Length: 92
Image (cartoon, rainbow, N blue to C red; front, top):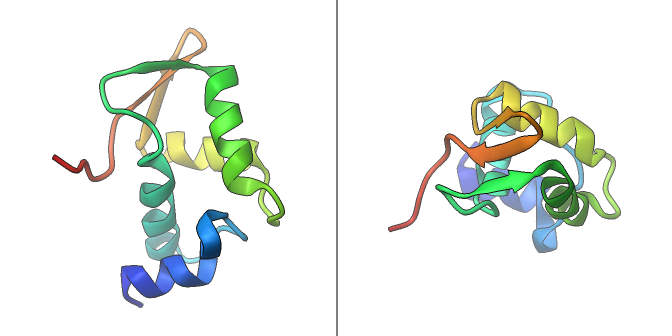
């Protein structure tokens, strides 16, 4: 499945309906979500949660699950309550 097709299925109108079960498709969605976080900046957990709640509003997946997947996929790193973007594509 092409990335555009995956995103139109799981992230229509900029909101995450649900995470795909297949890892490859889920990675596409998570890379899209992580683009909300500015590279090189550290975010407190509360700020990360606000961003992810907006993505998950009205969908089947809760923001805590998305946060955990972002960390598990090495797209976000965390230490001492701070998060930073550690993966995913970067537009220059």
